[in-house]
Amino acid sequence: MIAVDTREGNKDSIKGSGGIGLISSRISLEGPIIKGKSSFIVSARRTYIDQVAKLIARDSIGDNGYFFYDVNVKADYRINKNNGLYFTFYIGKDDFKFVDDDDDGPDRRFNAIWGNTIAGLTWKQQINKKLKQELAAVRNDFNLDSKVAFGSNGFVFSSGLTDYQLKNDWVYTADSWIKWKWGWQYTRHAFRPGAGSSNAGVQEFKSTINDQYAREAAAYLSTDVNITPRLNIVAGLRYSYFNQVGPTERVIYGPDGAPTGQTERFGKGQSIARYHYPEPRFSALYRLPGNASIKLSYTRTIQYLHLATTSAATFPSDLWVPSGSVIQPARAQQVAAGFFKDLANGAYEMNVEAYYKTMSNQLEFKPGARLLLNQNLEGEMIFGKGVAYGLELFFQKKTGRLTGWIGYTLSRTERTFSQMNDGKAFPYRYDRTHDLSVVANYTLSKKWEAAAVFVYGTGNALTMPTGRFVYNLGYNMDERQPVFTSLNQYDKINDYRMPAYHRLDIAFTYTPKPQSSKRFKSSWTFSLYNMYNRYNPYFIYLDVDEEEETIKGKKVFLFPIIPGITWNFKF
Image (cartoon, rainbow, N blue to C red; front, side):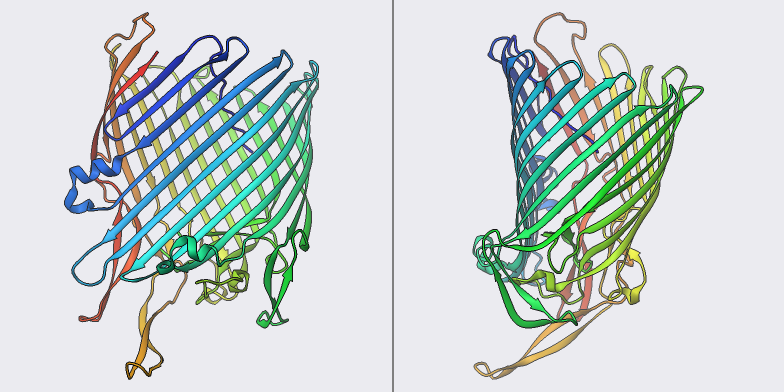
């Protein structure tokens, strides 16, 4: 688990920093609310790389684009030396749009919008030198809308989730060699999963899909013990509870898994399904001579919230759904082993870690699933198992004019469903065999610094059709002609790979007065995004030419080479 906490604002004076550039801009402002007692910090950023790309390559970019923005706010109030209140707020949004307005048929439009809004209030208390606690109340809203349209037809995948959470964490440092942690949390979930016709509009179809509700609670206890100066043990147990509740209405299924045609209605707060499981975890760190160490760990986790995917979709179409009477919680167990070493008195760091993870009760929409305006998506799902394993390598240089790091992961993630791929394992949609990142920073002089970033990743696994056939839906009496539709034919699951993603970015930063003692300081950054103009596909869609009776896969690319200039400042 990784805990991320934003820093507090300056309690004595107003300070700010930011940057104004061709690709993006950012601003951060902090200062006292009540001097010496409370403070605030506000940070915001916005990209407009899509607008710049259109100016540079209007013919290839057209009306397509991507942008994101986010805003972070934090305010704190020091009640006394042992108590403080902290308010946090975050909002962020990503927007991707693609339009294919070729002359060979109706326009194709793709649009994915997703984002989070989080607000929380935390009370931190230092009870004495050994004991402290935190009590927090948090609301989190997530929304994803993926819209796909072809002429006047189309559909929308919508995934919404609102959480209200209350949690309390305690830390007791009994001695220098032992620390105890315990706590509890309670969360109320509200799910908004669904898919519908884009003709009706997102809001209209959302109103026809039943929301789903659940309660989740957990308590945990862990200890961090230095058994000897060389051996450290961290052991803990978390016990979780999940309860899906009404109001909702669901279809009743028979022993064969088919719907009976009957429905069951649940009132507000009425229990639908309950689950509770222990989740143990253990890790051991042994320090070797020569600033080296080895680490072994085991973790068992339970996931009550599922990300349902469909392998046949090449565009974001994931839905968050809760565990219930049909959908069982996902269970996973992971073991990991690692070797860590510092070299040359801490100038270099090297890590090697391997992991193996097994998963059960994994979800996927069954082949030919009916998703549009379906109130009971759980009836369109199948359940299987998964496995993930890999090797992670990391090397970092921390000192000198040249600094940076190299990270590489070799991994495999598979799923197995008895109803798919003849029961054989296939790569998961987000399986990535190779993942490489190289970051380098070099100090050219007191005024100039250079930086470069190279990333490489294996393309996502996709299921592409191997053929297409025409199906007779019936006869239109008004127009006096038969009605046909085209259906894709599939063979193996996820047997196609998108092209690998790789990109090189470089930047040079010029600081006119690096040793200036003035409060206001500034610098200039000159950059090249995607230096060698790699066309990295974001997704693939099928283009059907009715006259020539051919089907072609078309790739939707992200950004070409883009130069950037940013003026950075702080005061």
